Image (cartoon, rainbow, N blue to C red; front, side, top):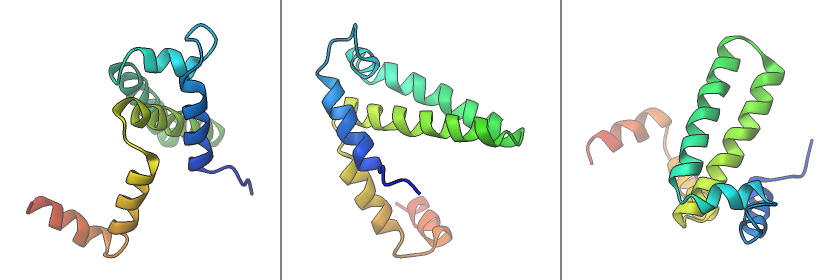
Length: 107
């Protein structure tokens, strides 16, 4: 089991955000505002779904890593700290997923 966490990934994205766009893929994505990482996130999510449907375990592992990375970059571009998303996930665990989803329909 690895000790690398989503927070470690967010910290790495933060560190690379200030690098040159010529030397850092993260900085290059961020230089386009939220649209560029949003587009990449969508592409990677589709690729992850395809790998899952095809039963391609190694492919899904790689694509899932891409999805998480691009999501963290998109959050950075939008000025949303990972801690805010994690707090929302924690809040949602106080009830069942079915009840939580039903409550969202009524707001």
